[in-house]
Image (tube, rainbow, N blue to C red):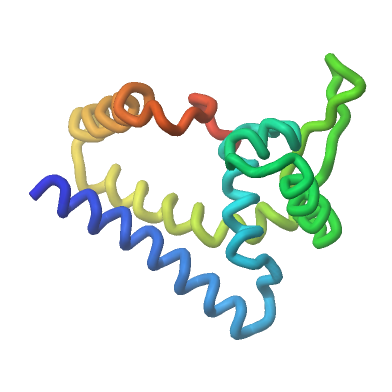
Length: 152
């Protein structure tokens, strides 16, 4: 029952996102391919990685990663920012244009979170937060991301 409930919630988040993306494609507002969307989601979750860190995480070659990154830069969704600590390194950073695109999914997440805090007591919300933190930190070791994902 728990597995089914979790899968249903996860699926509803995905489907809402897909529906919004398709509506934007119909109106010609979206210009990211599926693979580019996955790439941007990964870059954002990794917290301003280098091209090499992105390639390593995605298990793709550095040239393949560089190709994807350059395409995203040309479309205006990504910037390369020189590292302050190592001037030879560049970190990948999402642009304002991407955040407008990204808000498709985060706006719905915010709406659902508002409904959760209205529906449940502060104690229940605290328990949910505790459980989600344990899931993130302990039960999903295959996917390592920063504890705090940058939110715009």
